[in-house]
Image (tube, rainbow, N blue to C red):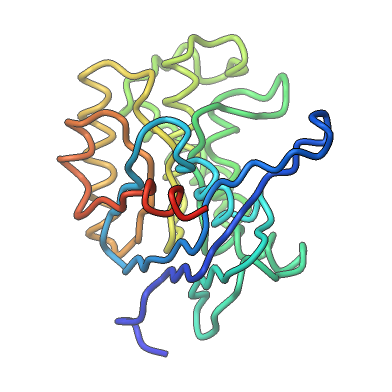
Length: 235
């Protein structure tokens, strides 16, 4: 295995939801999905709402199990198939290789924003003082007022919560980063900051797979777009 190998290889991926409240009706999502993602590139999943973009992203992260296919993630000198990995291996993969920025912030109540953002660094072994300093610097860059840093993000506006979410997802180095509409609730100034942060991640060799409904952001950061509708049509 070399550094030129893909960080992510998806092959033959298929998923159907079973609607148990609808007498077991089957809802095909994707079939035969396949693509590669390399270090240092940003790839967007494109297509209309309902085409399966978020489902694909959740399958890559291991939140959704798959019916068929493989999701190979390069983890150091080995490759892990997310589709078949046991829970402990998946947790370890997320802890050191694969990051995720979802649309919505899910955190422990009553924990301040600064600690929420610093936690991934502390989990990596960074001293708390350094971790909180770096968290503060990133929150400042994302224009979150310092008076909010000690407050729990559950009390914040949608845009403020999204900035905390982005900071938490980007603060630690993860070779593979998944992003689900990271700028959906942001104003133009903060979207520009996120574009800068994504470009910095790319220069650091991070492979990014994301959903970017904002056309300006997508055109600014993405190297190519994968049309998910071709996978949906095959389902």
